[in-house]
Amino acid sequence: MKRHAVSVIMSCVAVLVSGTVFVVALFEQFALVEVAASIITALQVFFLSSAIGDLLEKKKETNRTRNSAVVLATIFLVAFYSFRKYFH
Image (cartoon, rainbow, N blue to C red; front, side, top):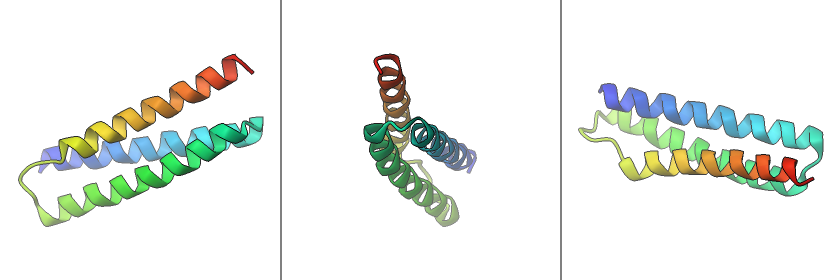
């Protein structure tokens, strides 16, 4: 049960980070980053709903593949934004 709560919190933080990158990229007018951030934010929301579903169904194991995808997508988005901001 504790693992599922950590998974939900991690997905929620990833959604917040992705949404924040989207809003910041919107104000700074980085169009390519905006598109990537909106797609990744939608993906993160899907992963969050899946994690909440696993928590409600009381599954025994967390989905490690999903958790890895959440972390990697968030790291990719932040790195892409940083790269774009540095070379702009």
